[in-house]
Length: 167
Image (tube, rainbow, N blue to C red; front, side):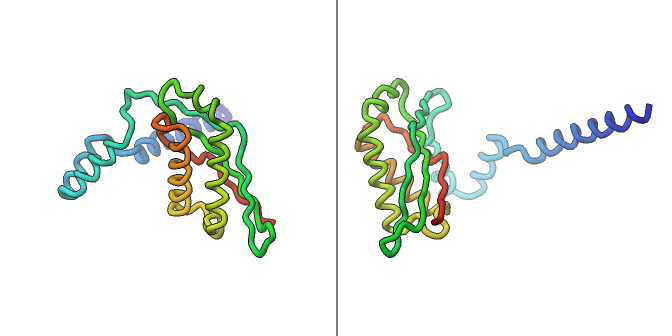
């Protein structure tokens, strides 16, 4: 009997702890977000409105296309390869634009690779290369290159994997 009570008690405690943690750590509701923004003044309300204007509507259905192969970018210092950076990208595109992405994939990959080479040559993959500022610069450059190839069909470029292997 005791052999059965102990596991059941532990299971109940674990379940209760999990539920409590989920409630405690849950993101704030939309009402809480609105209340916090209104307390921060008119500039915060304007900023919130600007952010929402750039976010896709819940009803709009963007599609995600993962580019088939990873990008391998050498990081060169003193004319020697110091490390290799491996990057995987996914594109957020307008509905029914997958065929366009696949039709222009070679040109798109060439533009993205050149942008990553430029980023590496400017020191973007040195030090803390995963910092927000570094990744935002890279993401913005990739987005601009992607828009030049795909036009308005491209919503955003997502860096889904990035790793550096030092030599």
